[in-house]
Image (cartoon, each protein chain N blue to C red):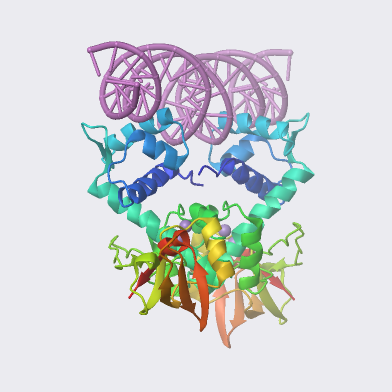
Length: 220
Length: 220
DNA sequence: TCATAAAATTTGGGATGCCAAATAAAATAA
DNA sequence: TTATTTTATTTGGCATCCCAAATTTTATGA
Ligand SMILES: [Mn+2]
Ligand SMILES: [Mn+2]
Ligand SMILES: [Mn+2]
Ligand SMILES: [Mn+2]
């Protein structure tokens, strides 16, 4: 009856992947500890075990780096996480800001077959409810070239593709503003003073702070 | 990032519930150990912890008994297990003999809200794919009065309601025979020698051993 | 360079769950 | 009633993850 082994390891892999593909390329023990909200001693111990299992490498300069094997595993977890998020939103009518914690649990269910069937049941979605791409069964991930709305050309129709920040607060903020993935926007005017902008959205003009606009990723 | 605490405890509760409501009412350490496929030392240790948590009682004669609190928890796990089984069969097209191990994992996902939504999504099923009733959110379980097909009246139309044995072997056997939950049967003739019987099923006569017939539970 | 701050590492524990082997107690059979 | 078997319990360990509190190493800035 016992399974769920190395459950924790999966969280390390996923977090490491996200850090490596985020702003900082070099991930040290402190950064990983903070991201995982765990004690550095704990993380160091685990990273060493994962190095033995060939999932990460500990470089000479103390950088913790995913191996190909580790990256592949990380992408499988991310795939599962995002597919479950689609399930929760599309089938169980959760809102996009409510699904993260549940997906954190569901992503650890062990079965490749289950996830293939789930993917088919959901109609092979290409992105999750937050606009993040879903890796295929081989871990291949198609990256969409997006730019922050704050950098978008003026008077050009753009489409909301994903978010630079998926915090609960920001998701709720966007909900209140009525903005969701796939929406069309058009920057009407940028305020030189604070970078805030007037944007055309569903035929009405709304004002977004620079902070908000820089976290909305769009494709032209 | 959760750690599925007391994940194991849930398996103990469920197994204990099933034993208490099975053939033997008195469950001792050996019986529970065998059912869980764990070492008796392990089980004794855990049972003591669960007694501290008021989930079980250790009677003077060494019987291990669920408390009301423990039974309630057990029924919640069973509810989750069975709802996930319905999901797997109805939505992901699994066969009834393929879902058990997956449900063993899914039943531990922690969220009351999720399970309420799943139940609604599935259309409030009353039984799981094996004909076993699904407890309601309060743990109430409506028992269906069934009898083994081997005890059914002759020449009377009966309906397959559930199974006394849900082993993979038996499920596959029934699949081959084309028998599933909800099917109508009629005992045509019982062989006095070995208790085997000729049964009318979907307009054709089939022969079932006494062993098979006694594991098929029907309602008249 | 030298003091200080930050990061890495070591050490000693803790909780949850699990096992094997030894022993004690109870039940059963001869 | 004894001998044998079964069941219960104790003991010492192991694996996985986690923490706090040193201590050591490394980086940084004055
Ligand atoms: Mn998420
Ligand atoms: Mn997401
Ligand atoms: Mn089952
Ligand atoms: Mn079932």
